[in-house]
Image 1 (cartoon, helix red, strand yellow):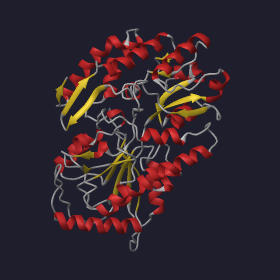
Image 2: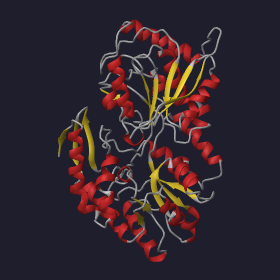
Image 3: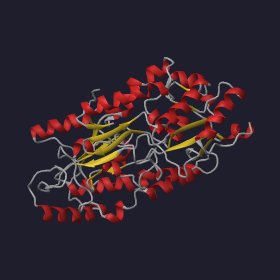
Image 4: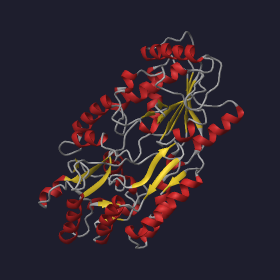
Length: 454
């Protein structure tokens, strides 16, 4: 996939430049970093960082179309900062565009943006070794700020104890459901996966055509397999992975999904497809999915009316005491180790991930920064769109993402789309396809240079 990078706006202001509070703090921290590491050096790999000479100048920020509003708002609120705002694909669907461009910039010795947003959580798997991303918890951003991210939110950004990016938003999974229909039909919201399966079978008999979920998207394994603690994607080191896609935790969920596919209460269509929108959008009783389903799927795409949608915790297996959930996305911000403007870059990154002006008032997705998330949820509740308490389940799920599903260079979504989706659509069972999925993951991982344990 090729994305065209284009400048969408740059503003130059004359006269003396004043510095805001964030920039002053960031500047002081940068000076400490430069003093400790020396100046005029180069970016190093994990464990070393030598800031280049801090000359300031234009702050170049790369964003996707969704985060464009954030960059524009920052420019509006900070006219003293000269910015070059550039849009690109945000590495959507694992396009690899950012990595390709950084490789080019590394060869030519110029061109790196100061700050980049990526829709992917795995950029550190290559960006650290490429010397692209700066360490944030080594004097750039104070621990008092970093400690306020949701539990484990910045795990994808951490390499050997060093933080190389900031998580923008979370995509923890919960159980979305049609509250009026559940009440009308006398159904209880399932608390276990066993209850969930039984309800799906009951719905098939009593209300044929209604759905309790969908596995038609490439992110289906991140909703169901991840939540089931399926060991298909256990990243154990920078270039090591354990793949156990045929284990019991994988088989139990595959068997459940096979059962519900068989009753036609589990859709095989993408929830964003025109087919789903035309034929199934008004047939959703239950739908496990990420936190962003509320806005992006139900409200914006399917046009689900207000007063229908409610949120419950993701079911757990009855034999297990704790709930574990999956994660479907959640972007990251990276600060270039080559930046000659670390103070402005750090100030922007801190603002864009923590400020109420963006994360609470404008952000479409659940903030990774916990204080902003609390206010964001209050705003969603006050909108009147949802039924009941949505904050409790979403806040709990933010700390329940199973840590055994890692963030490798290879895309599990691409593997699922190529290996599983066509065969499921053709009528093959998910349980029977687990060995095929296992082999595909192993092949993709080895092609990406991973040592694989099975």
